[in-house]
Image (cartoon, rainbow, N blue to C red; front, side, top):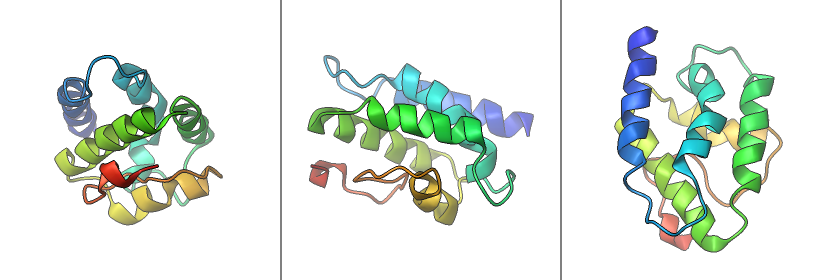
Length: 117
């Protein structure tokens, strides 16, 4: 499990360099908000995401009020999904819904973030 977390942190460090400067979306904040979801999205966290995870998901979604912010968050999540093979697509695709959050994107390596309104 420690290796999985170290790998996740390394990927997050890479993702910090991808988002364009000047946008209000913060990769550091997103990392802190999504970190409690790690066990769940790799299939080791039970049938439902933990409360801390859903609180982080809600905070992430509320921190992306504009189209550029949502696209930046989408790109960050897309990169995380693509670079972290332990993430299970079915769990990431249902994460926002299971947390009761409505958003125009998901955690997916295949999403086209430029289509996010």
